[in-house]
Length: 330
Image 1 (cartoon, rainbow, N blue to C red):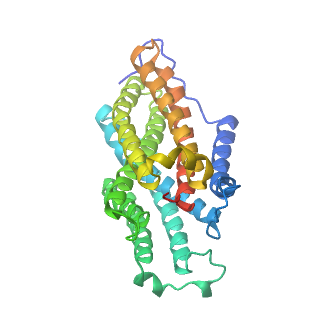
Image 2 (cartoon, rainbow, N blue to C red):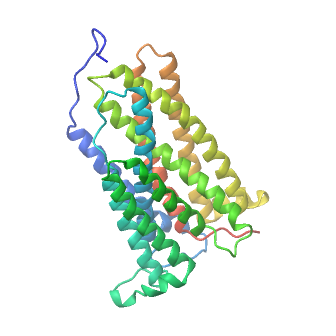
């Protein structure tokens, strides 16, 4: 599809501003899990496990890797339907999968050392991983990312969805041990929440990369792709919101939610996540309205870019949430 007459078909090359923006985003993604737990715990009287910052950082990388690869497969399908003849942007799936593998390996090492940050190889009990539930789940995630990396380099990269699903199931089961009331219900809610969030964040990232690649060759197809993604994203947001509310009420009984949102580390971090998701929802709504009503529909790209940046912060905050002590059920 050729560009319409009079359209600006110049391709913007990444400049110093883009490089600085990426560096700032990466720094923020690292600083939030490293220092976020300490800030959330301040004044609550709660004690977190040793090395909680490092664990949160590893889980941030794991969640980001899951989102990037799953989103690439999901949004890649939408892109092929929008413009089958257009060339796709360079795949990031393999890099994401190997990053997830490294993060999962680090988390497995933490489990192998008794849920402590290991300071030497002697502290690791590798054989003990096979005898515990947490160890088995950690090994499943390590192997799943390894398979996902191989799938990303194969002729059928979409087959990576199966090992990535295993990662999501492993995380859902890990978050709800058998000692919890109705753990399978909690795991089911977490599985849906994590899957939808990964497709939302990773899908938007891939869509924006595709829009940039099609800027000069198929601008109309790029706008159509963003519209297709926006329709699916609305459903994903609804599922994320519903499962998030249900999970919160399982962690915090209704009568204690408002109090625990300000007096517990888990509640404070959850409140920060809710506010960030609200910002993302507003940005998504603005982008959707511009796609429908604006004369220049490419103006929807600006809020969409801001949305993916805030979603990256949400991923980091979510990782911090998984590392903090659970709230007390009063």
